[in-house]
Structure formats: C-alpha cells, structure tokens
Length: 279
Image (tube, rainbow, N blue to C red):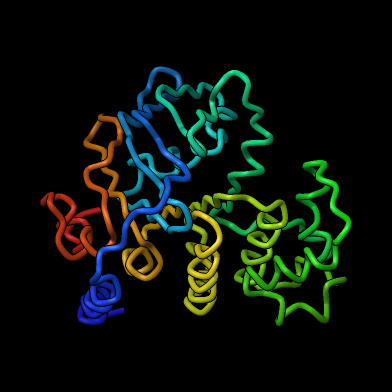
C-alpha cells in the first residue's frame, strides 16, 4: 500500500466513524500493570480498557512489550520462567489473578491465537476444531453444529466443508490460521487475543483474516498485536501505542480511537511512529 493509499484509508475510516460512538461496557481492563522477567522490568504502569465487542490494536516497535503485555491478559505470562507481575487485569470486573481464579477457566474465556499457525497437523480439520473442547473437558453433544458454526465464523467453512476428514497439515498457511481461530472459538470465549496473527501470511490470506476479525468483533472482544500500521487502521476501533526507551521498560505513550491515533495523535512520538519515521 502506498503512502497516498494509506492516507486515504485513514480518511475513509474517519468518515466511517465521524459520529463518535459511545464506549460500550468494558470487557477487559489492565490497571497499572507492570511486568518483570527475573530482575528485568519489561513493562511499567500499563492502564488500558477494552470495550466489549470492539477491536483494539497494540502497536509499537519490536521489544517494547506488546507481546508480553497481551500474554498477561489471560495469564500465559505466568507460565514463563522468572515471570512476575504487579497490578490488576480485570475480566468482567474481577481480577483474573485473584487467589480463587482458575487459570484454565480464565483461558477458556480469554482465548489466544499466536503468530504462527499451530494446528495439530496430523489431526483432521474436524478434530482440530473439536480438540479445544476435549482438552478443556467441556461436554457438548452438538459437534457437527459446532464445527460448521466455528468454521463459518472463521471464514473457512466453504473452503473445507467437503474435506473435514483431511489432515490439517494439507491446508495453506492462511487456512491453518483460520482453523486455529475456529478451534479457539469452539470453547465460546468472550475475548480473543491475537499476537501478530498475519505476520507469516501472504497478502490474500491476511485480508481474509482481517475480514474474519471484523466479523468476529460483532460478537466478541478482540485485542491484536500488529506491526502493520495499515492493518491497525483497517481492523481496529481503538489503538494503543507502546514504546520503550533504551534500557527502560515499555509503557503506553498514547491510546484512543484509531482515527485519532493515526489522524490526530497528541504525542510527537506517536506521530513519528505511525508515519514510519522510526521503529
């Protein structure tokens, strides 16, 4: 996409959201979240709200803590050696790190899609979709309906409906990523976290994933880490810009509606970044 086309995308988005929408109820919220690996502090004082049924993009240079932060939102961070966290992550008003909270239950409600597609390659397409249910111990009898519904939601049903018994490894990279999304949807999460879900995909597959994200946001809340500025403009209602100075922890420089972050940022560093002048 050329600079002129990118600027036009911003203009179109501004027109689409020219009437400011009221923020809906907050589904997920980070309050003063700081993160360490052993003695190294990698994030400091992150405060972000994720309104229900919206898409929020996390942008910023490599190494500023975006992927680390998104992993704190469903307790994946705590699985890493030496990891520590301060602050609160509220899901529907309750701290997911509370002493009575079950991490497995949290991750069922707050799903995750990673950078590289990770289906079970030798398992069938149908088996992949249902694997999340089996691994979580969820008992649901309407398997055929779940398979069709989730693959449809992930924008994959029409492409695979006649070969559900084929191995997932036969699918293209973009199809595998959409299969992983369908697998995550099968357990009916309320929030879906996506850590650079298109970085390993070709432009056509990326477009399909973006269409899927916009469609899914009608029903669930999505948080996406992306290095693709055009992608943030295309899919996100809100954007948060992360930055880390040399030898300093990452933090949020600016956050707001995507139209404001890209069209009228309040911080010069944000303006420089979204216009490709650093990072």
